[in-house]
Image (tube, rainbow over all chains, first blue to last red; front, side):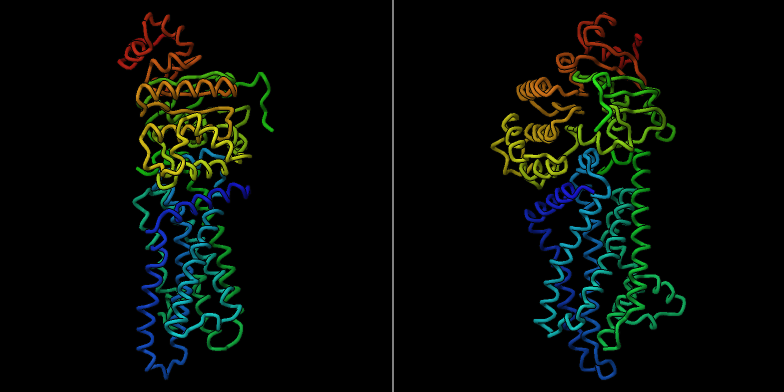
Length: 263
Length: 251
């Protein structure tokens, strides 16, 4: 791993974002809209919270952490898409840049995107609703770490899909993650799901994170089991996503797909 | 370091073939490029030039045959090879939303250039694009873009330069200036150049040797003079048209 090359590619995205107001605004638009709309809905529903004392915290915490997952995944996928859109992939692939360095740079970018958006959503949640995600203490960072890892895996997997199926598959970068949202237990516990869906939910790292988040918010102790499950699953998915990406790249070289990128 | 000795050719290709489904794009191609020479790859559209260059750059995996660049082979030697070669094509863009400086700075980092600022300034002055350093590449004329692509291709002082139609979008004046810059850089640095172009006069003027390919197969190889003599034609353009229209290929 040559860190100079990783830094070089991160610099490329820094220049891109620095010079593009629409890209910067896109970072904030949906997270801010989401947290404003759902935050006010939550405040309205708070009058019925007798049965569920932590309703606001569950909901806003879920919303903020879901966005960590989403931004992490989009950060990696869009880093690849930016090269497709600018027809720059060939220049990168004929440079000494290794695929692992490309992925490392994409992960770095994803972390920056997550940090930028999360600071804003945390601030809005605190200023508008008096909710501080820091009530989760150190677990907030542990939850975020797990979601960033899951976002990386999904982002790498989606980049592989775009490499395999071409630019027509780019909408997956924004849509695929919502396929798992119903079973990711973001806003409700896994126990709410029908029995046949619960094993699916348990196979998703994010579901363990959100279950753990509710456990912490309820003051019900350290969610060790959930966190161990989340990180173990993340390790498996990350290895699988990398294997898929490398296999797809080898296949793209065999079939000459790299020459047709952007067509 | 690499396996390059004085006797090692810059590029050695043996029995190279590439099949895409039912199409045989490159068919049992063998050739060598000597160190320091300018080698032209000629052929009609679809003859297999791009596929051949792509296999030399590890963008396409061969179906059969061997490729050695600077005495090294893919995939083991990939990083060592690609850090010592570079590529420019009129048809492969750099990010249009980045400025000239930003693009060159990024690629200088990717190629591990020691003193990027000095290197970039020297190249942009040489290609007469110093005044456009702060402009986005997307705002440049096609001729300026081509010169930025060429500057990028020289950032790492490559031992081998792969050029795919480098002057295709340039007016005759700028094309000639670009050729002169390329020639002077090649002479100063002793770089090997593999070039494709549909400008036959340019190929005649630049190339030490030329390889004609058709339907992925080698038709003939030699200096421009040798090729003209063998076909009894006055210009490479006449030879090209003769070959492209199915004329007899002379071994």
